[in-house]
Length: 411
Image (cartoon, rainbow, N blue to C red):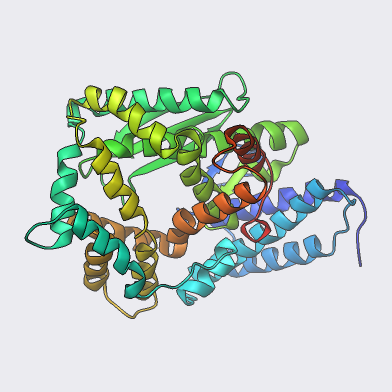
């Protein structure tokens, strides 16, 4: 039986939000952000609902969403399709909490609405050969790459100044093309003991807390990467625009909650990674960093062009991280072998490889959201006319994507 009328979506959205928050009582990583009505949060003084009860709640919500007929308005259809996919992902996560493990690809399909391509070792051969030519010498290629990159580490006493300069620059680039609501801002903290390098914790009211992990040395390129990815025009801007246009503008309360293990993450991470090159295309980036960030860090910029040539080739190895995670989580290799694979095919240090494996343990197939997400977002933006030679169109399409309820399969 179909239910007519857009008004029915608001109570369904509330049921979705309450479901996500209840699942968060069982999974501390699940609720990444919430700034909706406090009355919707579970009462900590009461017994939490069992995962079995929550599975039934999720199943019923999905049935009701699928039976709901909405007006023939594209944005309304996007909203309903988004809620269905998000609710299905929540149902999948509940199954996983009961030790219901699935293959890497099945998991990513059910959680993130996407499956990353599979590549064998030969796929990465050309990039490895190019890096051998760029950095000739004795010893393992990974060791040579790491030794070269160590020349570009930001001294710890200069990290905050460099990062804040990168943030200011990324904000200026973003504000020149996207309208940001008054009062938006974020604070920065430096932390240790994490499996990730940076994190944006959205607080609502156009505010974010951005944490930067200083467990390992931070290379000069990571300053702009993190500033764009976590801040402008990445996660901070994505959340600000969703709050401004959908929560405040339309009253769509489902966007006050962000379940991490859901299709929303592929859009969020993909847009944040693609946003780096939207804000700073390669040639502009090298010029900016040589003129501003290298001096702040006290680094010699003479080898900056070569450094970015190396990084561009390393980017062609990004999908090797997916292969390591896929094999590890499918049980084909153990943690030590996964780290070995990362060292060999992503040319990272052993320390960084082991940190990445800890990320696999905690976040599992989430890793596809960074590289596959970036590729899907780029392809969508360019298909809509936002090619590199049309920066104004690129920013316009990118901003529209950040402000709407998109799904990976819809890209």
